[in-house]
Length: 431
Ligand SMILES: *Cc1c(COP(=O)(O)O)cnc(C)c1O
Ligand code: SF4
Image (cartoon, rainbow, N blue to C red):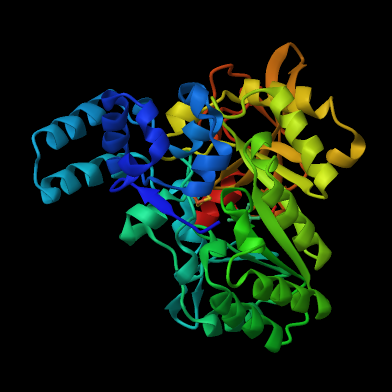
């Protein structure tokens, strides 16, 4: 299959779009002006169920929905578009709305290291053993998820993290012997041509860094454009590169986003996974829990079972981040835990490599372990899976139970405490 992208400018040419009313198409235009919108022929032809598109999780995952922005914002942009306002005027209004959508969640800016007097704006280093690398050529995606927490990478240049040169990455890595993992991320690094991958990965291999143990690539491409690993021009070359990493004694892991089990049904995705595994790539899966997409325990159980059958290792279940269309997708922490638990109950031990539900917030990755009652007080039991300070990890702590809470910021310490155990250290770090 040949890749064919669609965006705001040509989506009316998608044959199946005939199924939509004029109003539905206009709604896509309005919301797509604010939130980045892009899809492709594979998602359209193979993943979306057009007979039931209004409720279809894969349609909602790719096409902007009216309720994804608040009414006020919607009406403003709708009026401007109807009145054929100038691009500049529309852009001004769009920027105002975007800035209200928390474009830079979890204090990402503070993860950018300063090295030899220079800010490395294409690296994030939050947890001591892992460094994120944002290659410039990998800052877009084959299709955009409507829940995207990286949307400013596509929409707001001043919030973008990106780096062109491999040298700075290698120097930073050499100077930080505690880093064992490099995670290529984006956007989606797998939109990069193999020749760019080669440049970055060969630089890592040639540098012979003894503490580098794992190279990870975070990607949605496996299920939004699986041909990246099968028939694309440079697919074979990419697999050879992965094999080379493996031969060098470094583990290579593809961290794939799989939101819904239907994404695993096509022949080409199965073939892609087989090919990846055959060259020694570890495939691990993660996904956020999203209302209207996968807020159901059976969907998760089915997803994990199918993944394990294919050789994919379930890794994380996330809670939708507090950015962009979060209000649309949010599932309460309480329900998230119930869904996790009811799904976890249905699977065997080899699927239980998954951890969650987890919130990636500023202090770290906080897992909602469950709800309990201690000395007559109903509480959330929480646990850091990752922490800005690694000594916080694996130490259960408690928050007042709140059935409406959807994010860490909504929580308060339990038992009348004025702060969580890590707060003093956390504020000191930010001082
Ligand atoms: C999630 C995350 C990582 C990866 O953490 P692991 O638990 O090792 O998978 C690294 N850096 C940041 C900023 C993250 O949010
Ligand atoms: S793959 Fe990731 S970065 Fe790309 S649109 Fe989806 S959530 Fe955003």
